[in-house]
Length: 566
Image 1 (cartoon, rainbow, N blue to C red):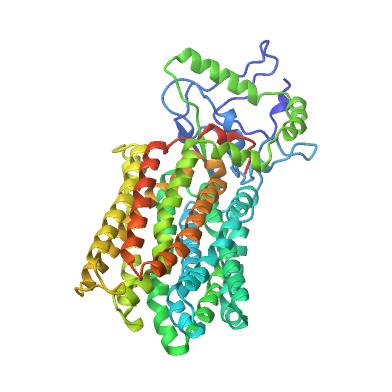
Image 2: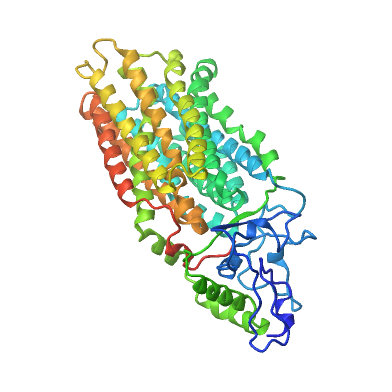
C-alpha cells in the first residue's frame, strides 16, 4: 500500500508501514495494550505513546478490530479523529460520528459527574410525576366513586404507554444519541402530568389516555440515560453512575409520597398534578446547553500466552489498518448493504441467555416494586389505618432508605471489582439475589403480621412491625442496582439502550399485570394483603433463581451484530 493510505486514520500504538518495504508489513510497537484500552475523547489526548495504550511486553493486538469504537477521540489539535474526512470528503469507514451533547473542545474529565447529576435530576422528576397519583388516587377514588378494580385500571394505564416506547427509545438513543431523546421524554411526560386533572374531568377515557401519554414519555427516559452512560461514563464508574441515577428514582418517589398529601390537603388533588408537571421548567435550561466528553471502552479479545500467536495477531491487525485507501472505502457500500436491521440485532440479543436473564429479573423484580409503588399508600391507609395526613411518615422512609442503599451498593460493587476482591459475575449474582430474596422474606413477614385481620386491617394493631418489614424489604431491593440494573453494560455495551429497553419492557409488562391483578386479588379476598404479598414473594424468588443461572459478565457475540458505530 502507498503511504497516502494512512492519512486521517488513527493508529493507536502502531507505526505506519515503511514505504517501499518488500513485504508491505508494517512495523509494530514493542509493547502490547492491556486487557482494556480506554479511549478518552479529550483535547490533550495523544494518538500514540500513552501508557493507557500499552502494557508489559509483546506487541499491539486487537486494536484495529475495535478502532471503529474509538468515537470522538481527538488529536493534539483537538480535532475528532472519527470525523476527519479524506481528500474526497468522506469520513473513514466504520468511524463514529458526533452526536448531540458530545463535547468538541475543552477538558471534560469530570463531565461524567455532570451527566450523572443531570440524568439523576431527570429521573427524580420522572418518578415524582408518576408516583403522585398513588396518593392522589385516594381522594380521586372517593370523588369519582371508583372501586379497587377501577383504581387498578387507572394506575396501570401508565404502563401501556410506558411499554410502547421502551425499545423505540432505546434504539433511538443508541443510534442518534440519548440527549435529545431524554429531552423529548421530559417535556412529553411533564405536559401529560400537567393536563391530567383536565383529562379526569373530561371522563374515564381521556384520563386513561393521559396516563398512557405520561407512560410513553417516561418510557424513553431510562433507555436514553443508560445509552448516555455507556457513551460518556468511564467503565470503572458506570455502576456508581447507574446506582446514582436509579437511586434518584427512589428519591423522586419518596418526594412524591412526602409532598403530595400536603399539597392535596392544601389545594385539592388537582394541585398535585399542576405542581409536579411544572417541575421540568427547572431542569430543561440546565440540560439543553450541557455537553459531555465521549469515553469509549475498547475490549480486546481473549489473550493467549503464546507470544507467536500474539505477534501474528498484531501483524494481522496492523495490516488491516494499513489497507489501501481505495480498497477500504470501496468496501463501505458492500458492508452497509450487509448490515442487519435493528430487529435482527434485537432478535440476536434476546436469544442469548444473558439478555434473557435481564428480562426475567426485570419482570420478577418489577412485579413487586411497581405493585408496591402503586398500592403502598392504599395499604397503609386501608390495611393499617394510617390517615392521609400521616402517610408521609410511613411511605417516604422506605424510598429514602432505598436511595441510600442503592448508591452505596453501586460504589461498593465498583470497589469490589476494581480492587479484585470479587469477580464481576459474583458481584452481579450476589447483589441481585440478596436484592430479591431479602424483600421476599420481609414481605412474607409483613403478611404474617397482618394475617387474621378483619377487612384487611391488622387485628393486633401491630402497625409498626408490618411497616418496618415493608420498609426493610424495599430497602434491600435497592441492592439490585449492582445487579440487573447494570448488567446490560456488561453483556451488550454497544446496544446498551436497546437491551435495557428490552428488559424494562418486561418490567413494564410485569407492572401492567401486577397492578390490576393485585387490585383484583384485594377485591376477591376482602382486602387480604397477605395474598398480595405472598404472590410478590414467590415471583421474587423465582426470578432470583433464573438470574443466578443465566447472568453473564462479558459482551455477548450478538452485541457485534449489525452494530451502528456511535
